[in-house]
Image (cartoon, rainbow, N blue to C red; front, side, top):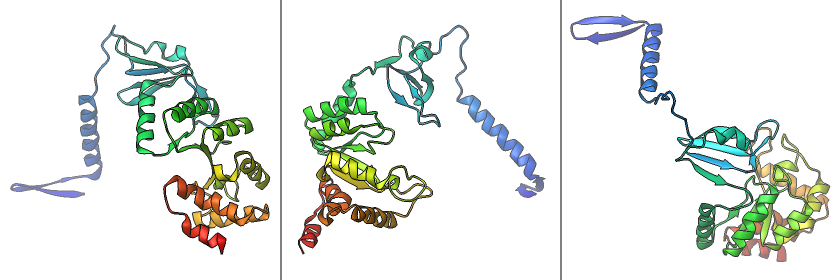
Length: 261
């Protein structure tokens, strides 16, 4: 029970009644911001992307062809046919079939000008080639593929071709050490390093996931794996430290001095 003093009299409202009033208020707020659909008027999305390669990240790793956006929210994902009815006279339609949009090129130019890192994220290998080819032409110096063998789907040929453009391969160590995210063997890691080269490989953490080792423990584990693989100590330092430091314009002289000692 809650007591409220209203002028001369006191009145009591039960917790259930307070919740009831709160629900009514929230419903009124929602209705006040709702724009009802006018009968006979076709609903149209603000943006529709067609002929795309969209990783939905659902349990089945479904790949969609088209996506529709309205009011800053995704309202449909599926095939081109699924979103066709949502295209109106004022809908912006982007055909993503093997081409970069002008907006993407503008972003690439900004990245080149600021000398910051362009990462591929979860783009599939086929689209990474398109993105990094254009980025290299536009003067981007720092390019990186995130976990190339997971989701992205890079094979050895993809890795070699991307490295030839100056792209670095970043592998998440959580996929190579004991833990919930373990997916690959030490031999797989050795092969990936060999394909890209030590100087073009960065081993990062990605250990903020449930069931993973803590970052410091994780780097101890990956270091031991590299030692067991008979990897030279200077190469290990490059993989877990120096390559990333150079990428971020951080000094590496101290580690180099330790190796020399």
